[in-house]
Image (cartoon, rainbow, N blue to C red; front, side, top):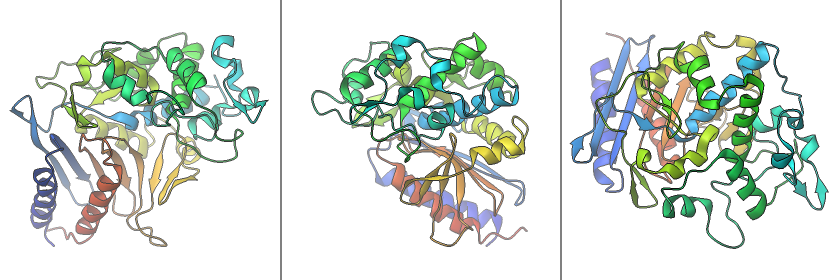
Length: 363
């Protein structure tokens, strides 16, 4: 298949998905490969009746966990922290009190930095785990859009409404609570706010000028397009108008563009921000879901059993966002469907896209 034919095929399928689903307000797709000499940056749909543009910023959701994990790796390389450090070394007594009580035993002092970045702490997830009584956190977030949440408040809510799943290190359970704890640890180590560290360690060096932490900071350059709207549980959400999104903090609150995310992924793959040794450490996998493994702020998606050709690694977000790299074909796939509950469908689309890309022949 010729390059241009491949582009037409992928774009047609992608737009067909968006056009056939009224719950997708807008979507973004960037496919880049130095090997194939391709760079396709696309957008479809609209925000506030204005056609979506490929350079438009969007909420990245849990993709930003990779930023947090990379900062931890950078601090380790600087000798300021260790994966084996107990988190009690860096957090206040109020945060630590009753943080991890499982079957009557307090495991708080057993939690290490590595447990947080690898989602093996056993801590519950305030964002997606459901409490036995009362509203879920997501319902609160949507019902009280003007409320600003500190990370300490999300951790306190977790302790009051949810219970740990297992002792630290035994299994893997995805948790935004753990990543908000990492944000606080980063602040303690650097004596700077989490968003300042994001800009100084990642966004500024990589010239990710359209990337920032919503509700906390601003981009280096003002984008002429508004942040793309999200369909969240059938609610049309403008991220910047919802202070309650502050709750996601170090778990996935960054706004970015496809081009900026490509800069980050290329720098990560190319060992420009952390060493290859550090990256390999981050890529020590544990089973998270069927076909999806978790490392340190990284996901590996195994598309087919026993066939590695279509495997990708990077991160996914709950709104159908994705920032992935396929090492076999040297292809980056980045984008967003901006709709909650779209993770599985986005993976299916990525797999079909990779199958098409595998047929490409350079002209």
